[in-house]
Image (cartoon, rainbow over all chains, first blue to last red; front, top):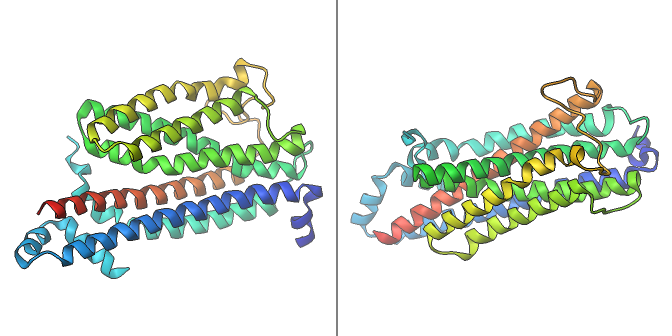
Length: 75
Length: 235
């Protein structure tokens, strides 16, 4: 069965390169998107940390800001 | 009317969903790969080269589906003056672009053993290449313009121009003599593909749809945090 998978009647080079390209594209897109997300999340945490107590309190009153901070801490 | 979809409200859901979608994607993709590479039969004419169909066809379907959604959402964004529609469109575009590229590359790899050539200026291949250019233009517009209003306007014009190409892609095999065969899967009538090939194809389509959902959610969350970053600057 392993031989069949790696030979495929002589078409393995085409089939596996098509599947390989697809999976590689998936992995690249996932990593690029993940890096962008983490970068933006870190920027948010850094900005939030630099706020004074009053501004931080006002920013924290927004639920979404709290969610972003909670997600960043979980990661 | 669209208050339920407000970013502030749905972030709670979109921020948690990616890990579940990723898990589901890995499971469905694993099943799909076993079906496509091992369990599905070879074709009587194309032999094992037919297995390329399991990555080529779902990619083409999803890239067409995403472009159609982007156009619909952009037009809705303009009609209802709702920024969130544009944000969703922008977050969908990268996966649509990548699926379009995969369809072209895997199609080219499939072309060599079946047609004897890597590339032909066939109606369907050419129209898919044009769609890739529209995707590229759409993504570039978001990068080069700072003015939101300008981006919304230009990106919508690009999608409206690009959507004309979508029915051309779909019906190119009927309208012109092309190397591509006519559609084997029909929603309204009986499909000419055997169930032993149809099920793996549907499983791979589900896996690819989950992947595009995963990328969409991650990209959408990134965009929301970007907006919140700007909000912190204004405090």
